[in-house]
Length: 277
Image (cartoon, rainbow, N blue to C red; front, side, top):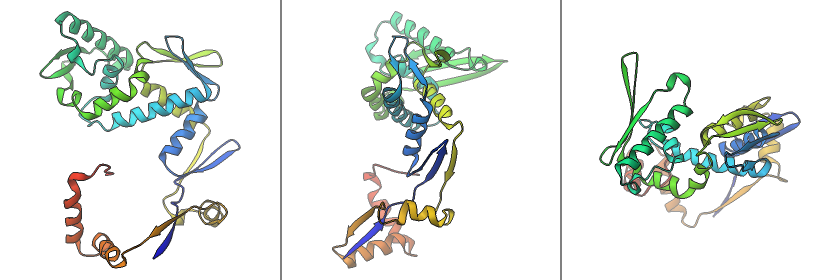
């Protein structure tokens, strides 16, 4: 048996000036905001490299991928501090052996962290040891605050992916760069996340955005244009070779009896690779 499925409905409709488009997901929205945001803007690193137009867009797309990795890190860790450690090339501290080297690194990291944060969020001091990892502390009006970046995180596969895939991007921010528009410096840039945020915010200016949650939120002409028109719709062909087995699985997953669904999930829990909660 064969069945045909229509592609998903677009998630967004955006309009900016004369430009109007439908976007299927958050990734397409991000790319569109980047392209809008870099118009008449360029990024110049402290090393003299200038990014603009397509080269700039390509860099920002890689940065958005990097930020997605950072967002997977548990909330108990300060992502801003971790990003500065990554920029400084200090996610792997085992390569530094001498105490004097470590002290210089901590001094440099503290300078970076305080420089990259708002005025009210400065005054941090730092330390590192091989057992506990990084510790940054400050005391404001008698109240102590602490930020820990422990060894468990530094040894994780997530951190290894950041180092192996995006070290070249992180190195661009070792010294603050400049965001330039109309031949004037708009702002100093201290990190990839700051650069992406500013471009996304710039891309949102003058933007009209509509988010769809289902068929009922679309006008008939919009539904025809995006999904039903045979000249541009996309169909997915699904071949069902064992109708009885397919029906059983469908009933297990979608039926009223909860137990088969629970057993299905539990039996595959250890092999799951992409989990959306």
